[in-house]
Length: 256
Image (cartoon, rainbow, N blue to C red):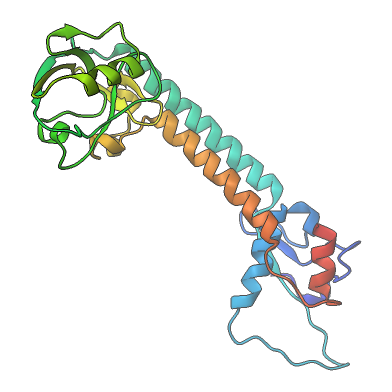
């Protein structure tokens, strides 16, 4: 580790007291780090145990901060993007080779309302997005991704979601409903609301209940949105606020 006498505390001109935990470079200025990394480093100062809080004209304080520099962060991001793209291509290839069976048609009967079905808002026709627990649809085994085919023996495949829903509400009880189930070799994504080949879902996701399954593309998009939102919140929050007039306060102003 660099010695304190080797490091200048002139935040504007010096090498600085920052070091990168990845490439191990030292004597780096704050400009080598993102605002998020600087804020994180400053925040960590609040949890340092046994801090020497002595002050006086003969006491010179040097604060050492560490984080991941922009260069290392960019390299990591590029590596992760390349790995994600490779996985995506592998999934697409496997999906193209997957064998999807012909969908099975399942007939159920409902004798009470509400049926407990929430329709998908995307795509054509009436597709079940959710079957509420304890309701007639769930008790009859209806699952997300099932497409409504006929009501009381009358086809409704040409109807849009609203038309099919109106027909369901107007049907006399008990009503017989014919569904087209999710075909073997495929699964239903509750996010993009599409029936997709099984390889487009992770193994972990396929162990979850049908109403919680999302394809890998939707999961990645959701994670990316979450990281972006978190970054905005942290930037708005401003992180740790150093005492006015201190060297850390000067650093925060330079990094603002």
